[in-house]
Image 1 (cartoon, rainbow, N blue to C red):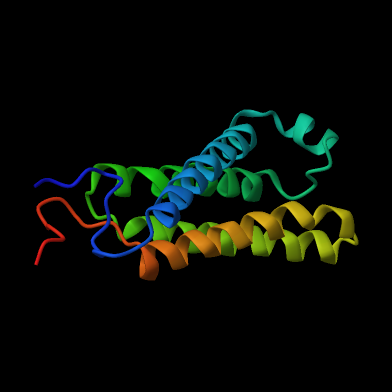
Image 2 (spheres, helix red, strand yellow):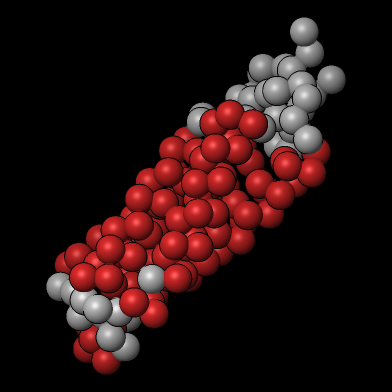
Length: 145
């Protein structure tokens, strides 16, 4: 019996947990794709006008990191090629948004910390889920024993 990308290496994780993780992975990937793409292609003056006052090079690095992280949330598990990269991507994106929350706090933008904290929590849940509760098996590894 072959595994589909939605199957996991653990023989007993809840199907509901696996589906929840996939939904969150795709949702967060879409959010980070949009946010990262925006930071990469938007002119510096427009970013500044929208309140992004960090140096443009730092914004571009953050945007590229978000884009790469978005792909990392989905592709390794979907293709089952190095699926352990998915929880690593989730962990790193969680770190990125935590840094963003701290930067907002340092600038006195208390109202702006809610989205990064929510996204960070969701990234932590995905990392936990794919590291421990419902890891994805690499191609060629069956969960039959």
